[in-house]
Length: 249
Image 1 (tube, rainbow, N blue to C red):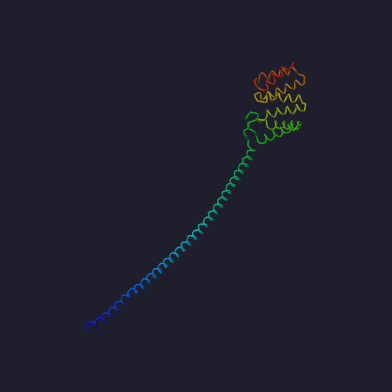
Image 2: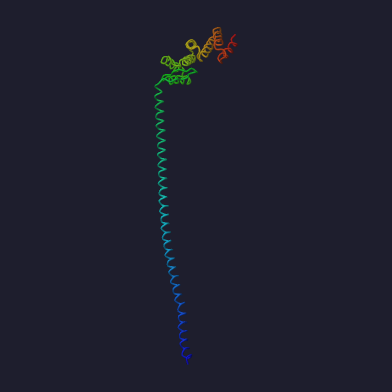
């Protein structure tokens, strides 16, 4: 009798226990889904945060890149300006140098200058060289009359010029070209007398000897040629004089 009443109670208790056991796993499953869902949300939040940070970093990098481009452009512009200023400065310096060089050249025309003429150094006054060159050019052009006049003018105007011996020598040549043998001889004799050590002196003597030979003055020519050999032995002019001596009979 007792067992009959206990069995139904035991069965009911067992049913309740089984219900409880079944209910516990169901509750645990719901809890795990919420955690997973929350973890996903947290991950999404972190991903969104990282994405926002990445976007911000990209914008910052882009801004920095743009600023760098601007700075590079500014540097390029400054370099161009610097090159332009450098070119302008170089141009100004060259112009200034050219100006002072030109000014110095012009001033030198009004100052005496040391110059070597036919191997002899001397002080040349302003205008001397131009006057001598002008007379020489007339001679080269075959205008012997104008050349003679120009050389005479030069000799009178610049008595202390280092060009004097050379000018007198070419005056003698101009007179010779004009067939003024007496005048040319006298002019060359002046070169020999006044400038015996000048390179033109033996040339003047040889020109005198040629004048004498052309005029049939063989004795005088022989004497002049012997003077050249005696005074200027070893020179080219002396060799020419010796050759002419052997031709005079």
